[in-house]
Length: 246
Image 1 (cartoon, rainbow, N blue to C red):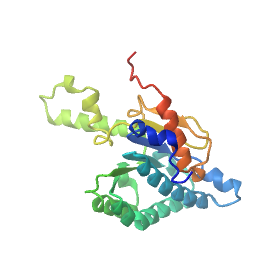
Image 2 (cartoon, one colour; image 1 turned 90 degrees about the vertical axis):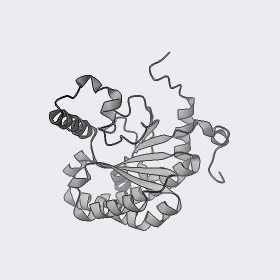
Image 3 (cartoon, rainbow, N blue to C red; image 1 turned 60 degrees about the vertical axis):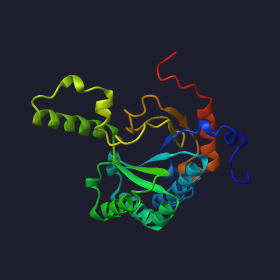
Image 4 (cartoon, rainbow, N blue to C red; image 1 turned 60 degrees about the horizontal axis):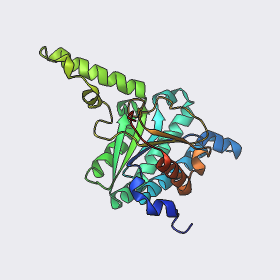
């Protein structure tokens, strides 16, 4: 494939989605198929994240949101959680210079206060050191759950109403509510990709994906490559997005 850009994409770059969200599914199954510990599946998944960031930026995507750790993932074995967090810290430490060199800004959504101090330090350092970058946004959903996000937004609005007795309830519309979500500074995803063949949203960006195009890929996440991202974008280009209109 040479530079791995298909002729279709080269001729229709204007159709590239601005914001892609990915549910990275299948690390454990990838490891099990190879008779490896689940932790090594997550390690391979980190390598796939690195490829996906590079590919998305090369293809003209501006924002990549990846579902790195959900609020439900805390129910997994402690050993697996520790491995995930260690790989996350290592990934950010090893790739921070590369992110800066390529103009990539790191952003985090979710409830990071529940993460360990060591993880928070690495995240805060990455966010701070990439804050001025503007070519691409890598948006990590960590300790994230969409229902928690909506509850947090409602709670924040309620606190504002309690402080301000003159608050006009009529002000609360979709735009106002969106301003209280974790993603308040980001456009909604144009395309969602989920790997491993599973076809559900798993409590991910439920509000934001009201009109997102969904693409389900059978490949396990560690096997996901640039050509798979191209296939997803090619499928996206065929969709007619009407946003409820005729």
